Amino acid sequence: MTTRRKVLAGTVGALALGAGGLAGRRAWLDREPPAPPASDGRGHGVWANWSGTEHCYPALRAAPASEAELAELVRSAPAPLRPVGAGHSFTALVPSEGTLLSLDRIEGLVTHDASAHTTRVRAGTRLSALGPALAAVGQEMPNLPDINKQSLAGALATATHGTGKGLTALHGQVTAMRIVLPSGEAVECSRDQRAELFHAARVGLGAFGVLSEVTLQNQPLTRVKKSVRLVDTDWVLGEWPALAEKHRNAEFLVLPFTGKSALIVHDPSDEPVRPRGPDNDSQTLMDLKRLRDLFEFAPGLRRRAARMAMRNLPEEIAIDEGWKLLSNERPVRFKEMEYHVPIERQVEALREIIRRIESEARDVFFPIEARIIAADDAWLSPFHGRESGSIAVHAWYKEDNAWMYRLVEPVLREAGGRPHWGKLHSLGRKELAALYPMFAEADAVRRSVDPAGRMMNPFLHRIFG
Image (spheres, one colour):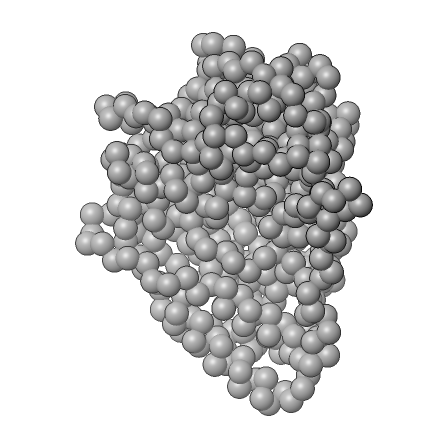
């Protein structure tokens, strides 16, 4: 991104000088949002998620170092009991006035099978640590999400995914798992052992108990070639089905008010390693913000300035093992809404969302992300029974995001979209039960393992009723 950043920054800087103090009016809007108090009236310290959309004051925080410690805490700690990983979910899955339970000390590889390319992993392992750990035994996960800071348990609980034709979300790689039920009993489940629990809890929202270990079906280490290039948005929308079919991993980021998109693809390669350079996407994003600040009320000028800045930018190439290239650093905080629509509805929904944002939400500057995910059979998976196209919209953490609910969510719902469990949405039990064919069966399993509702916080009561 270095070349792109320098060109864009130079153009924006020149425009800023020519425009005088037009961007100054936004200075007060860029102040930090108010932080919640550091403690509540009971003296309990605050917990907040990464984006700042949720916080709570748990009575107890615990970080067990073994499954035995975990089981005792799950059985006896103050309810509601909520597992917490990296806090990267934007919804209120974690907040609890009872117990927050971190799995950070239950991490690392347990064992692996070199011939079958399977690995048993402790559930608190962060995805960023899992990549090099698997590489050390000659394996890698077939796919990874855009961000790798999550814990494995948290990523599975929310159906975290990457992109690629025929590639499932992370939970599609799970062949077995060990879960500590709300009673404190630790049980093993798979397709052949306690199959209903396996199907219901593989994407479990932390509502069925707490994962302790997971068996992953991996693949041999694979070298891939990553390409990032700017293309016309109209072109990529028209060619998207063919592009998704052609490349192992394909996604694109629509840059609103520019007519341009960043097309990102990964394909197997035997070319010499060409390591990725430093991540400069954050600076590029802030340059797009400056462009917005200058021309928020002149979208025509904003488009022309952006296209001038992006003209003739070279394609960027990196070649390395896949786990090193699929995920990215995203230090700029944001709020996100993401839905997964039937693949045949993705492009039409994207066109309408772009139209609505560029007509009615001129303060938006974050990209709109489009990916593809294969079908699976987990009961609460957004990809249950259908190949899906994901559409994600973002807002800077300092700025209002009501436009997501007003302009974007209706389009995604009309297209039959299912929300990402970790991203913002307004749905409750009634709407979700209509979208998930096995919702009632999954909830029946949940009630059977947690009849007292020890895992249920207010957000989960909204989901399950």
